[in-house]
Image (tube, rainbow, N blue to C red; front, side):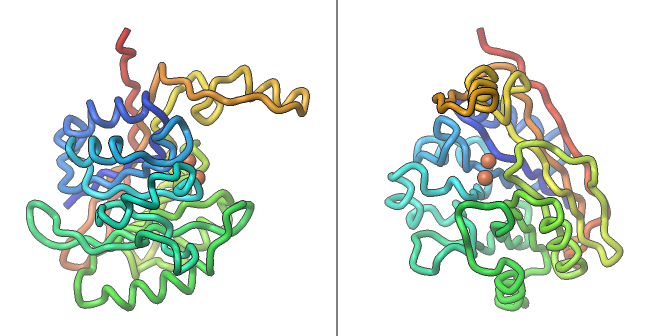
Length: 264
Ligand SMILES: [Fe+2]
Ligand SMILES: [Fe+2]
């Protein structure tokens, strides 16, 4: 069985690209389930209800998020009504939403999706993601062996450590957050698929999805300038993980990169 995992969706351009091409990609790679990180869909920061609904309608099964999850105030109001939208599990327990779920795969079987956030170089601080991973894996034991972890983190060291920590206990540990894909996809010795970052769904003519000039201005002068998302020249980045649903272990991971034509 195969799962399509899509990285951070940035702005209108990212949303449009995933909405338009997710079914085609899913068919092309014969995927039975789609997970997408939506944390930057709302103008580059946070999520909106309309965007989430559109993604679900077009074939995304679970939306994960990250440090930008609360950037849009509305999320707090609709996240509890959307069981297929996750926020990092290691945020404060009192916060709305949930960090993992067990879902039915449309062609049969169950999949657990866990959203965790790193703590190295992250402004928004959560509880220990390693301890929490142990706890969640223990809780879902007996329900399914297929477990996908979106590890939303900055430092490659922390991400690789998580992959190695969970090797043989989950199907895949897939990194998000940096918006830049890494070339280190591999199957670890005990059968967990791993990649430090799958990359974003955002503009190739940008700095992490934002227009280049204001970001350059800020770096070069140290002065603040508003950043806008570049919605043109969008590329969909993600990964396909192939696994055995009986064992929950992966046999292959492949990176994907699909440039999307501009609409005008
Ligand atoms: Fe992001
Ligand atoms: Fe992030």
